[in-house]
Structure formats: structure tokens, C-alpha cells
Amino acid sequence: MMTRTSLALTCSAAALIVLAASSAGAQQDARLALIRDDATRDVVRAQLVSASSRGLPADPFMSKALEGVAKKATSKSIRAAMAALEKRLRIASSALAPTPSVDELAAGADALSVGVPEKSLKQLRTAAPGRSIAVELGVLTELVARGVPAKQASKLVLDLVARGASGVQLTALGRDVQGDVAAGLKPDVALDLRGRNVLSLLPPPPTVSNVNVRPR
Amino acid sequence: MSPRVVAWVLFVVALRAAGAQSQQDVQLDAGIARVRQRARDERGAAILGVTWRLSDARVATLLSAAITNTGDSLSAAQMLGAVAWRPFASGWAVVETGAGLNVFGLTNSLRGGNFSGYVRPRVNLGTGGVWTGAAVGSTMRDADPSHGTSVEAGAWYRLGDLTTTVMAARQRTDDWPLMEASGIYLARASLMTDLDDATLSLRWARGRFTAEVANTWRNGRRATTASQDALFWSAQYTVNSRVAIAVGSGRVLSDPVRGTPDVTMTTAMVKLTWRPARSEADVPGVASYARVVPQVGGAMFLLAIVAPDSVSVDVAGDFSGWEPTPLLRTINGWELQMFLTPGRHRVAVRYDGGPWRAPGNLAKMKDEFDGEYGLIIVP
Image (cartoon, rainbow over all chains, first blue to last red; front, side, top):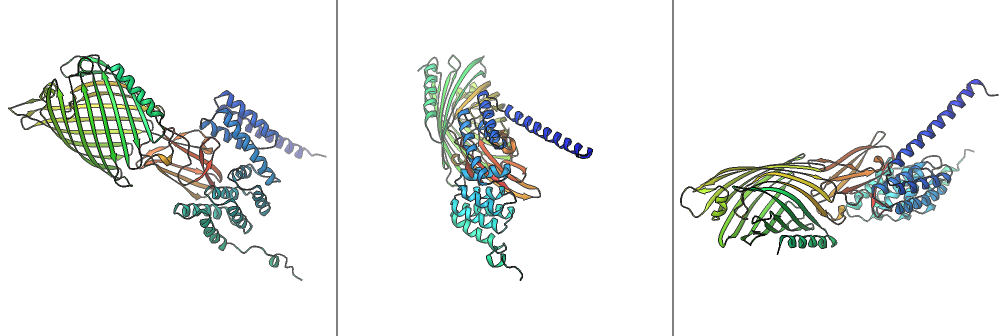
């Protein structure tokens, strides 16, 4: 039987959830109000409803819509951009299952947009099942956007994640590759050199011999 | 050719040039003025001008034409062609040369004209610079020929929003009708009028607003008796990348090289500019550098932009809800400093209301709106 204390806690939690939901809704309405063109606002509202019905977060859509408005895009192009984003978010959601965060979904959608295969997203999730991989996906996207082949970049980031590289090490890798590319090095060569450097600083990968050894 | 026909020709030339796709822009200036030439009645005037600029990293070309219609014999037309050449890629040295043609008495009868040319080498020294120059001009006024020469030297220095320019010029002419009309006389028999000019100008620019005030002091030399000074101020507000509004008032001393008279005027102009969409890659002299410095709880994002010819530079991104935010103008260009929380951030910049682009060295991402943005990852 529910005690008075637990009843009070449950009611408080429910009230907080309702408040948070209504606050998020109010925030979304405020951001929608920033879109002055009625046709564009209707398009965005419809897209948000569609995304919500599929369990996708509203934030990436809202941001894309506001970006389109700032860039003076037509409501038709904003609709097309949001539809393309929804498709990428759905793929990312499936690849990063079971419970991807909003940041991970947005980063995954970015990665897909530059040509990172869905398989790489799944591999990254498998390599780091219990924590956010938003930074890892972001660095992977940066590398591919800078001209590193998607396959090579995916493999290296996967290796680094498996070896426990930190977010700071990964972002530093992205910066170093950028500097090398600016200095005239080919992106794939730059990644190879910088990647080896980071890998050399990490502990060795788990192997059959050191994982499965059990005291007899 | 009547002023109306000339105006239409200028307008059509402007539109045709604006339609061409290259690194060029066309500016159409239209306005009204109250003009009073020394010892004459004040009158209203309509001004229409067209300026066409074409530039790349080494050479900039300018052609301009303007017509001032006062409805009487004071109406005039001016044309100018100029080329600026940067011999070195770093742009520290510039050699500018040009030629101008003035036609007087446009409405009633062609009372004459003037042809002039100049050369002006300039050295840019960081936030300032120096220049020297020489100009010659020949004037035909009511079938009476005359000539003028000028040598000048000047320097400018920019401190924050304020640019200070000083210039000294020495001029010589035998255009006595122009000099007498300007109140400059010879104390004794001489064929030439000799003048020394000193000019101080202050220009203040912040965001979309620019104000300038210039004062010129003129004194006679040798046989010439003259002691004049003239103050002219102007202000401009850039509404957007295509439209600017400008007002100005004051006195402009006679120019013996170009044959223009001593006038006091007040002007109000609308400036319309057509230019193809420009990005960082195709605007000469524009460069940007973004740096993300990791800090406790996030990172400091530093963006530095050099855009010497830009009136405004805006930044937008997730952090501003994609609301365009004007960058702060600094002594070296434009700057942004902001703290970013961990995560993924998108950012884009634009110059003079042009297309949004990824700044400098950030990873460039296509944005599905025919543009791009830069990606920042903060661990």
C-alpha cells in the first residue's frame, strides 16, 4: 500500500514532469513565433508534429527551420530540409539504439549527411554502449567533412573509442588534422599520422589472451 | 545629349553591368542637393551617379559617371576611370592611377570641359599608411584653355572605429576665371596661381553607421593672396547590403586640377548597390580564423575576421537561435568571443548581407539551403 510520503513524492514528480513538458512546449511556441512567415511556420509546425509522432526530438528540427529562415530559404526548401533531416534522424535513431540522446541523434544525422555509413554508427554504439558518443560522432563528421575518406575515419575513430580515447583527445585529433591539412598535407595522410600518435598514448587493446585469462 | 537621356543611358549601363556574373559591383547614387556657388544664388540640383567596380586580388578597376542637373548653365557631368594595382600579394603597396573628364554647362551649351589624370602610390603599414601623389589637368572654359598641377602627400591611421587622415597639397594653375570666381586673386602680375592646402579628416565607422568630417585650410603662395578654409561633413547609414542613405553638408573648395568651382552644398542621397553574392573565397582581402580553446565546463570560441571592404559582418548559429548578430569591429577587423558548452555547435558568417558561409578553418558542412555552416565540437 502506498504510504503518504510515497504518494506525495509521486504527485510531486508528476507535477514536475507536467511543468517541464509545458515549459518545453512554451519554449517551442516561442521559437515558432520567431518565424514570421505564416506558410513557413505552418510547414515547421506540421513537421514537428510528424517528428513527435515518430518519437524524434523537436530541437534538431527547430534549429534547422530557424537556420533556413535566417538564410532566407523558401518554405518549400525548409520543408525539404526538414524531411531530409527526419530521414537521417530515423536512421541514426535505429543505428544508435536503444536509448540515444538528442545530442547523439543530431551528431549521428550530421555524420550520415557527410557520408558516414550507418554501419559505422552501429559499430560505435556497440563499442561504447553505456555512454554518450556525441563527441565521437562529431569528430568523425569533422574529419570526413575535411576530406578524410569516411571508411578510414570511421575505422580510426572506432579504434580510438575501443581503446578508451577521451573526448578531449578526439577533438585535439580533429584540430591537429585540420592544421596539417591547412599546411598542405593530404587529409588521409594527416589522419594516419595523427591517429597513430593518439593510439600510441592509449593502453593496448583488450585481446583474447588478456581478457579471457581467469585464475585457475 | 540632354541630361535626361544621359541619366537613362547611365541607368541602363548600370543594370546591364549588374547582370554580369563576376567579382564586380555596381552602385547607383541618386539624390537631391542645394548648391550655392560663390557669389551666386543657391539652387536645387538633382544628382545621379553610377559607379562600377571590378576587382581581384591584384587589380581593382573603377569606372564612374555622375551628372549634376541644376536646370541651368551650372549643370555638369563627371566621368572617372581608375585602376589600383597591388604589386605584392600581401597588399602592403598599392599604385593607383586614373583619369577624369568633366563637362561644364551641360544644359544650355557646352561651356567647356576638363581632362585630368593622377597617379598615387600608397603604402599600407598595418593600421595606417602613407601616400604621395601627383595630378595634372587641362581645362577649356569658354574657349579659353588653362592648366593645373598638384602634388600631394598624406597619411592615415586607424585607432578602433576612428580613422584620422592628414594631407598636404601644393597646387599651381593659370585658370584665372576659376580662381577669381573662388575669391582667389593675384597680388601682383603673375601668370600662375600658387596654393597650399592642408586637410584633416576624421572618419568614424561602427556597424552600419559611418560619419566623416573634413576641414581644408588653403593659403596663397608667391603672388597669390588667399586664406580660405572649408568644412564638410557627411554621414551614411547602411540599411542592408544593397541600400545606404547618405547626407552631407558644407563647403568644398575649388579644384584647379579638375576645374571644379568653390561651392557650398547640402546633399541627401540614396545609394543602391548591386553585387553578386560574395563569399569569403571570392572577396579580395577577406580572411577568417576560428579557434576553440578548451576550458573547464566547455570551450572559448574565438573568431577573428579581416574584411577591409565590408560594411558589416554577421554571425549566426545554434547559439543565437540562428538570429544574425553583428560582429564587433576592432582595430584589426571583426571579432567574436563566446563561451560554448560541451556538444555540437553550428556557426556561419556573412559579409555585407551576402550568403552564409562556414568561417575560415572550421569543418564545412552543406546546409541544404545552397549554403554552408561550420561545425564545432566541444568535448
